Image 1 (cartoon, rainbow, N blue to C red):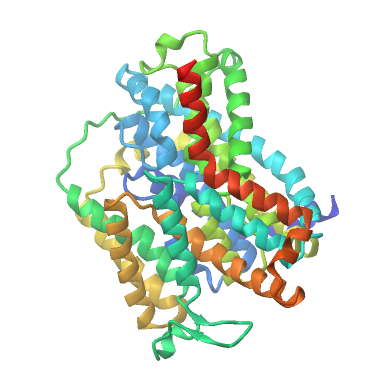
Image 2 (cartoon, rainbow, N blue to C red):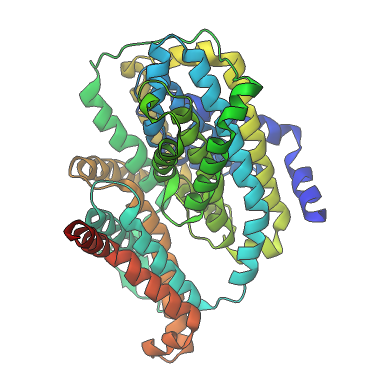
Length: 494
């Protein structure tokens, strides 16, 4: 309890509260604008937080992450254009309810279930993160190598159209991470005689390019798109009687979302889809789904916000990002001089509890902001793209340059934007590349340390039961598509 009190003490400074609420407001706005996303906003925000206190900086990003997940439901409900990928499932019943003349009710159901899912996952976070960290304190370089390899294998199911494409994206990220001077041997790799590459490719301009500039290119193709607008006059909170009817759906989806969020690389989108499917499976009114069913709204919304909190558990406790957004938060932690993982919790537990407090404030904050600003948010989605995207490009330029005061980083950002654009057009996702870039360094460093300890004997790694377990899990993860097809065919043949 002493660490919790210290964490809240760090958090409850006037400046920090203002930054958290600012993060909530930015997150809801970004989520409500189709095309913008939480990862993009966090990527743009990272370089501007260099001069901030680490608690304030990470708390603001965590608040933006939570609020952005909810913000995507606003446009999903009002214009059938999900502002964020996790809100895709919400649109299936949220938009029909809005068209039936109840946009305020749909937004109210989304807001309340989002808050419940987020708070539920944060309660799990308090207990799970220290336990995971305590377990991970027993890990050596070999165990961390096995864990990182397993996390990379999970990229196959992260996002995009193809597991193979996701793995390729992740491996490209790992390759980019090898550019520069190797820390163990001092050997220069892929620098081509350029002093700018000796320290490697900075992750901030890569993140900004992949998430912001590539999206700018995609949105330029949709400048003249016309959408049907439904304006919400006010957010209408559900009654206690209605919540009582929906309590099992909300609880079930919160549990599903938290579990999915804790799994490395799964994220809110997977949680929302599973939450929606399970809500329909257990519903007594299956025929109402797709026509404006309340269960079809609270199911995915509780799940995707619970996943946001769940994803922070492996990020902070193990240094393994649980989603694309937490990969960026992990990068920000590294930038501010922290070493995410068990030592973060054992040495600075008050910092971890401060982040927990920030996410709790964020979950309550977007409910309050939604109550008073529903009418405004129903209009913000229609800011002309010809004004919005030039502003995004300017912030991308400033953010990339300000990170290290280097024009080289600006060129890296532009190149990453083009790469991200063509990746998306060919079915490759940017998120696995980012996670490969971050996890690749952990793989390389832990493997080098393991080889030094075991005198370059790779098979000595298998003497550790934990490493062996992670290798088995990696094999099962990579071969899962084969086994799914095999058992499906077997079941059909019967």
